[in-house]
Image 1 (cartoon, rainbow, N blue to C red):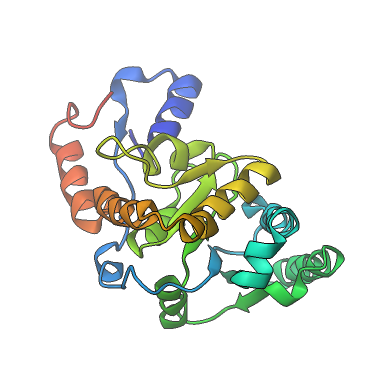
Image 2: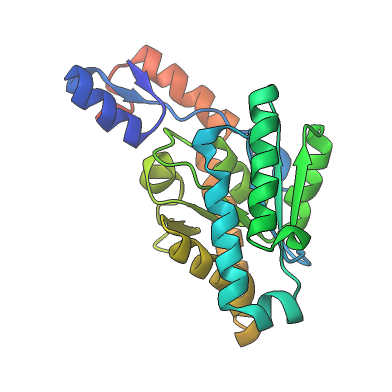
Length: 244
C-alpha cells in the first residue's frame, strides 16, 4: 500500500495495522518550473494559495493577519505596508458564499484595505504572485501532504504552515540541520511567525531569511516530479524500498 506522507503512514498503520506493507511515495510536485523565480526583491506580500474550502481555514489566516497588524502597527503598516493575498478557486456557490463570508470577516477585523482576494485566475497569474510574495501561509489542520506548501518553498517564499500533518512531518522538517520555514497553530503563533519572516530581518539587517529561502528551495526538490517517478518505480519493483 502506498501512502503520500509520514503522517498518512502513521494514520493508515493505526487504522489498518499493516506495518510491514506500507510504502511512502510523496506526490509529484512541479518544483523545477518554480526554481527560476528570483529570491531577491520580494514584495511585502503574504500569500495564501488553495481552494476556498472550509478545511483550508482561511478565517484563521485573516484573524492571524489582523493580529499581526495590531501587534506591530509601526512595522507592518507605516513602514512596509504589508498585504495578505488569498489566491484560490471556487468550486461552486458554496465556496463563493464562503468567500463572501471571508470578505465580511475582513471588514469586521478592519483589514479589508490590506487583504486581496484573487479568485479563479489562470496559473500564470498564480505564478506571478509566487514570484513577488515574500511569505507563504498555510492553515489546514492535519493535511495529509501539502503540495501548495512545497510549491511556495520551491518558489522561494518563507513558508508558515500548520503544525500538523504532512507539513510538520515531512515538508518543513529541518534540512541540513537548519529551518526551512515556520510551523504554527494559533493566531498568536502565526502572527509572530509572519512578523519574524517578513519584518524582523529587515529591522536587523540579518540575512537569515535569504538563507532560509535558499534552503527551502533546495529542500523542496525532495518532492519533485523526478523523485516521484523514481520512488514509484522502486515501490513497485521492491516492497522494501521506502517501506517503514
